[in-house]
Length: 416
Image 1 (cartoon, rainbow, N blue to C red):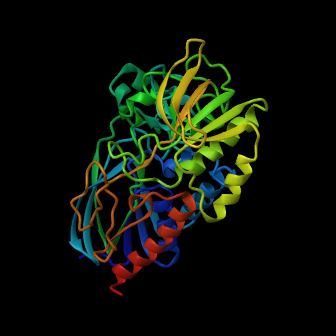
Image 2: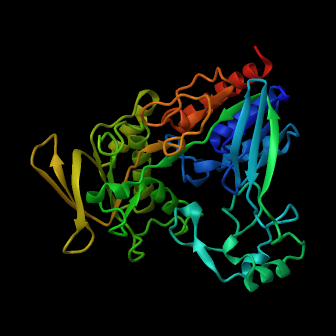
Image 3: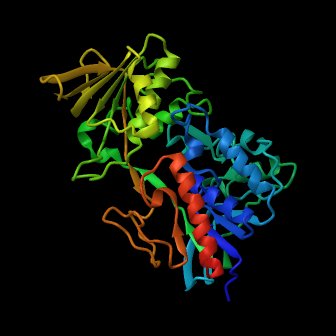
């Protein structure tokens, strides 16, 4: 029989963390499972939130403290749900835990990394730059434990990492494990992924190194990112003092993502401030179809628009190519003034849409989906969707939605 006092949260991003702490502080026992080696999700990869332009570290740290101080919450990273059976108040969930090859003795000292020479693309930085095969996912990683990449397990280098640890934390004999949980309800908070803009071949992603996505640019501006927070061109490491932000890179396009993700305009407005603050003589160009900055966010839009070195152009960019004089050439149509747009810049940033975690593979669960893969179920089945797996939304809306999901999960679990 399931334990109707226990709730499983699938996904350890901001929505999952919020649902977990809210449910636990309301009296439930909560288990969080997350496929990455750390909690925090994509928010941990942000540089700043809009509109306050504050770092996400403070909000994440508060949630991590709430988790550490609450014995009713347990969590498992590198974990994926394999199967779910039963119904509300009586679910049985099988979860597979992949080996981290580092146990709870880890102090985060980094001695294993010092003897490691193999490098792998840094997943936290979207592959921009490399990280040692013995690595801490990022400076604020929770849990604060290193990870040993499987590529060096069984090698002399892996053994050297184990020998370098004075605490016996490197355990190369770890194997995958399966855990079974009996729970009364499930919060499904598997989040989102950025749209693969290489499919929009005329925008140059993957062809020109100085074309990046909005999520990659967020890492370029972050102090713990691949350039230490300096906004530099990937091609030559030079300062990017003219940056073009191309909105709807694949979005609102029947050949790619037919829908609007709602937050991309605000993200680009925010990122324009990164450029302007870092380089006083810089220029930012935002090419948009419509600027969507509703309600309380209109003041933020107005503030950025008033910067004389930020230019907003209503235009659909038709092509990005290498400029003969260097840099990248953007070409498109100027919708307001007529004629053509031609602009050479140092860096192009593609504002990519949000794709739900359930778009590619839909879990065989009693949940309903719309045409784009977002979950539209009410949660009446006892499996309650939360956050961006339901619809594109910004962080504040995700937190609100996850709080509501925690309440629904409590009601489902208790049969109310």
